[in-house]
Length: 114
Length: 114
Image 1 (cartoon, rainbow over the protein chains, first blue to last red):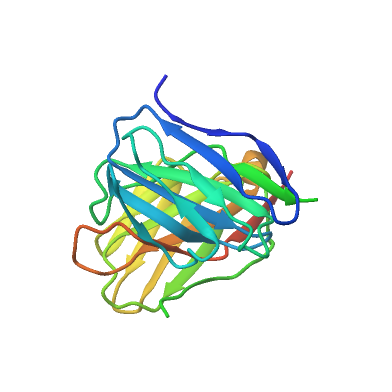
Image 2: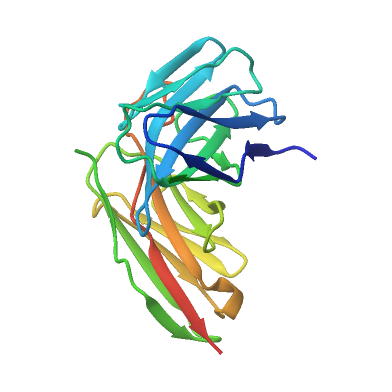
């Protein structure tokens, strides 16, 4: 089955702690994206990557970091600099990152602060 | 700041009726438009994409695009209780480059009552 997997489903962060959210896809897509969704709101773009070893900041990149060492993987680290990290985090992918392509979403990770 | 606006709802419709959802956007250069459905606690799933002015039909769903008026709408015919969800409108960045950046509206919550 082709698709996007995210882990863990739920993640708890303590004050001052960095945490990493996993995103893996076997769709052979070049482009991958990270979004954040707050309750009752739409999605906001954190980072995106169109090719291995290259990524760009989205609209709300502060307090987050990413890497793209493999085509299949695009992990997101929520650093201690992100003061309000509680949200639903969604990873997406598209074929090549060209304008107009459909983005497909993984199941999401819900991050909560202890 | 590029914006995508949706009425948050809830839009309550009786089973079998037509649900009409609207979305307006601010960037006149936008070329690609998407409707996603999101069930509570789940990730968004694509319903429709539309790129040209006019109507596009897929089963019980019809997307309508009017670039001159900067709105895109979604009609759900013969609404079923399983259609109860939040519907997200997404618009591309409008930048004519190899960049697939989507801006999402806040979503319209639809409740279909048996």
